[in-house]
Amino acid sequence: MGTNSEMIIPSHSGSTISSIVPAIVMGHANELVPDEVFDSGRVVLLVIDGLGWSQFERNRDIVPCLNAALSAAITTVAPSTTATALTSLTTGVAPGEHGVVGYKVRTPPGLLNCLRWTIGSKTATFDISPIDFQPVEPFLGARPPVVTRAEFQVTGFTQAHLRNGKFCGWWSPATLVTEIVEQVDQGAPFVYAYYDGLDKIAHVHGLQRHYLDELRFIDAMVARIIDELPDDVTLMVTADHGMVEVGNNLIDLDVDLVNRTASTSGEARFLWLHAKDGSTQGLIEASQVHSDVAWVAGIEQVLDERWFGPLVTPEARARLGDVALVAREPVALLDPRLPDSPTLIGRHGSLTQEEMFVPFLRFSP
Image (cartoon, rainbow, N blue to C red; front, side, top):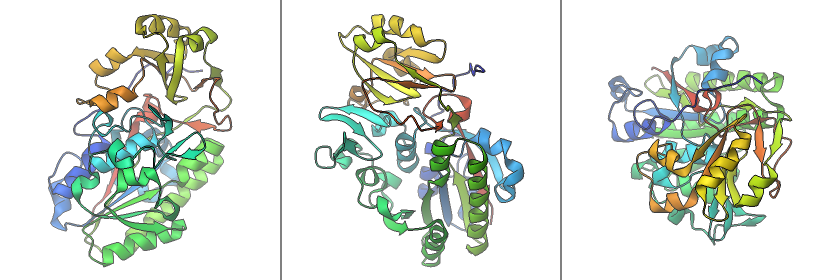
């Protein structure tokens, strides 16, 4: 396995996913959203789940529409996972402030799956209020149309990161375009749209033929959006994270390490260890057994280096573990005490270049 030795700690100002929505909503230009965007005052932001900058760069030849955009690489957040990144996208703040600090987060009632808003097999909406858990108002209090899968309407995660938006559910990718165009035609100055097909395909099939065909489909979908939008609307396309192909490179945590931890949280490429006896130093040393494939970082290092942003609320801090095992190689680190999805070929969550850099594409009117 080739070593990817450079850890990408997210930027929390400027070229980052959390700086897009505030600029659009407030009408304040920044290095991603220039003044000319506000000449028309109308913007569509399309988020393609799982489209990393590296994957985009390697496949520019099969996405002629996306390739024609003004493009830049920007950073996502830590961990590079959907629940955390989408919440930073919509709220405009880093994870340490909004508190959705991972895919699976330790809470008093149990391990919360933030995407499904479940604890174990049971829904957690009544045990953990999404609004209390994530108190930052999405879209800075604005109420843009939110074009996403129809079945997401009543989920806890939707309440956490999309509440107050005007929910416009799509039942097929073709009608995602329909919903976007309808909302623009009705006068919406800003439309937020989300598509998750690429992420699903990468998880199930990796980054090979199925993934490339999905990319081609997305390119055609974006071309249709551009064709159907009025000439004065700016379309922006970005993503929540990139992907790596892990395949069958599954590594169970060392037995001694398991015995030292009360539990784990996060996910297989950004795994938090929660110390059994409160001894973080001993846990850091024991975790070095996995240093051949992962970065090992104690909580103090994580906070000092501002992985989760300049502000970490007491609530968010309580959800973090004591030691982070962050996959450097294309592997998945699994807690043998917890069920996982061994069929996931493509994964994300870590701080590698493949996962941390995402495209920011702008199609000028």
